[in-house]
Length: 185
Image 1 (cartoon, rainbow, N blue to C red):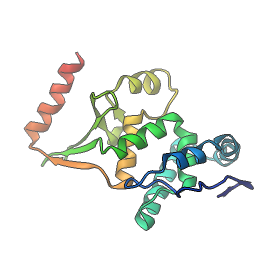
Image 2: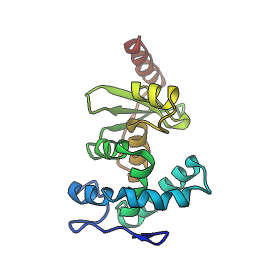
Image 3: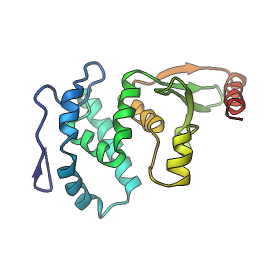
Image 4: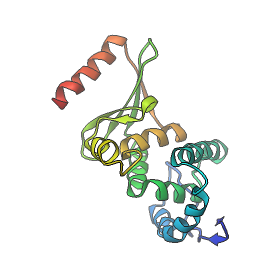
């Protein structure tokens, strides 16, 4: 892979990320070269705003998955650069099929993510929201991150088309949302 004249090694064991066969050691080997990649991405990103870069990355990842059912190494590096350790945690959530899209006849769509702690969080992809404490603190309060690992996992599961789906009535969806609200209080 080459970015701005910098070459990063490709893993020897496998190429890209494939949810049916993950070579985490190879993924970590690729991602360990992030310091070199950071310098290259800093040059690339200076002309673009971060949200546009993220949208472009997700779009490129979706096209790659349609073509080869894999996320290429360069996209994994970009993901790691933009989201840090949350990228690996989000990929793990996708791999464990922890994301469920709940939809109702009225067209409302809510994602539920079973977090690594065993707690379920509600994500609204349409407005980039997650009910987890990390989102409230790191994204909303401190502005340290664009997304939490749960919301990133939602976007990645959309890209990979691995999201479980559940259709419920409008009342059931309302009850699900109200139940979560009561649990938060």
